[in-house]
Image (cartoon, rainbow, N blue to C red):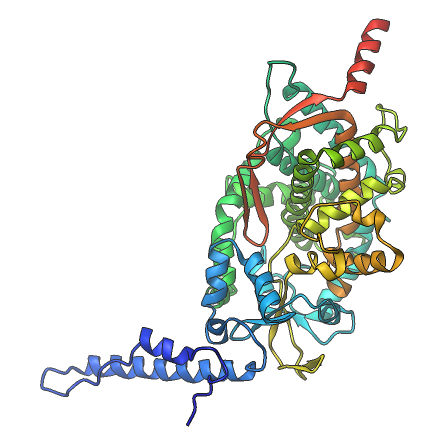
Length: 539
């Protein structure tokens, strides 16, 4: 009788038996203890359970191709995640085995845009995978990101939509502008190089500080001071970077992920307001600010938090959502700014064309461009689109779970409970969508494409911020922030790498990116210098 694994290139059960051989049957002697018999029984039972469950897991998805090891074990994906190369390995799996490939006993990855839209559509029977449950800020309470109940998730989205859309926080643009002015002031005070007077700017660090102050300003009407102080407030960035590898590993290993979803474990592991640094300290500062909105004087502002209050979120719920904004909103925007500027600075063609468009836009240097005006600048918008496409800010699987009735997609049966992740790296680098040079950072593609090609690219690109019931709530904020920041920095300053051979010291992926050591020489743009000289001459 043939092994049920005969369809694979190699028989994975043979590999397992070689690695984990059956323990020898003990010869019963007067020295055999009851304890050893119990131990043998337990080990034998465990091994039998493992073999049966592994065979069962293999069999239910046997019709979907993938790395042989992935059919019976999570080790394939764990190895890729630990090497910080999961985004590349997932893309390679899709290229080799098809647009939907098997990467674990019950896990698939897809770059099929139709399937992604199907999973995320408002009326979809798919739900969020168990992976999300570990992303809670309180062991006893779900947030917008971690909520597994689809009905509750949709209701929560409805309550927070107005706050993110700008309808109830009319100062959204001016709040971003205020932090931009602080950024310009910081660069001019500390990092303008002149001649042999070199003052290196770590652009990677500064962009992280900038986006953190933007999101705290929008959310709480109070930037926490990363830019004004030019330091890592409460060591938030440091602690997040230190914890990211462990978080990445635990999310890749299902048993650890399940353990982290146990309320008692979460209570012991989650940051608390008693912490002196990191997320715990941010949690404490955030809680104090929000408490004033619910206090006797009921302090009011025109910001995201006030909109949440208006729509009935509790003080505790707003605290969780504020932390989610800080964690997700700042890191992703900073990644796009850093990655975008690397390609702009290293490509004179792009640098010169973008700077010319920004300088000639006719916006006085005493003002910051409005979002409406920025949307009219074709090359600026092409650069932002290309930055979002070329270097996706979030590359984690973020799996969806097949509904109770299962699903049939393009002749492929997807059993109930199967988890399907999304390979962003592959989706946005398809030659069939973005052209033969999809692996090249080239903003011109958005301006040169014919109508049919552009429509195809735009349809693919809209997935950058998610889709349907899982679309990113902060998309509008992010787009405004990116357009304004690229425009203003390019027209006010001149940037060059201190070491062109090493534009960034490290660019490590844990589902999100840790980018460090992007050292730049910064000079004021010639028109800014001329304006200063003319002003001084008049005085």
